Length: 401
Image (tube, rainbow, N blue to C red; front, top):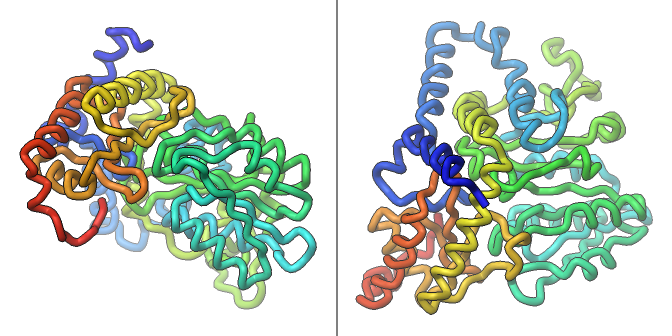
């Protein structure tokens, strides 16, 4: 339970996020609120480009993908110099998959039907490289049966690609058990922490997980274009990405032709020119999350998610969430009737949420969320249904935020 003083301290951060003064912001699982300092960071980037020009590369841009990784490292529970920033999670994962040969006896990729589709598309694409894909299905649309997943990981498995927290239901998977089973049979694990980094504690070093991907877009309040990749240091030198580029070359500015000589550090998994503006924008969120502390964020999240579940059920609304509080991430999907249309009307009324098929209206309180906003959003859903205001959005293009 979070103490009143701790709650008050967390809410003092609200003034650092301008959009909170204009809307009920409950969409951090999709796009975290922008800190004021992020705008200053982007202005710093513009000034560097404008005033220093090409000299900005040598004055900080060149090593920024790994230097910023040192801010993300404590959130992942790993040491400095082990995290590199990537344009997005799909490309980060693609770089890792490109390290493996799927033509021999160990050719299976194990994943689940509840993963974010981009990673499923990517895994499907490995069939053309000889991979055999094993997709473990969900029985209830909420979680994945752990024992079934563990049985799917065998001596033919090359890599397991799974999320720490499932994006539709916020179900927390047992990463310890998954990594342990994979390592027992000689397989690797790539853990997607996009829906946990910044709201659920992660200890990748203790887990001994091989690779971690995630990004700042969501709970880390860092905006798009700033994903990250961690590779276990003792594994790093043994992986040779085929998806690579000049930033990974040990003599990048030698502009040599022929086979690449890969660096031995976290730069090894970079490719082309990094998205420098996005890195400037992401820095503030990482610093704020570090100041607030993941443990404090998690305590508040557990309490507010439970409160939101209770409010929704009291209003007669179904929820797509795990029943056990300890298995819930930071999101509650409310499976209201006409959920897509209701979500559009909520957006029009400045209640910022999103919708996902098979889940419902996703509502995501964060450390800056006031308790009253949880009551407000459920009450607003009730009003929209009672007044049939959702009908104004019937037939609207099914675009989801």
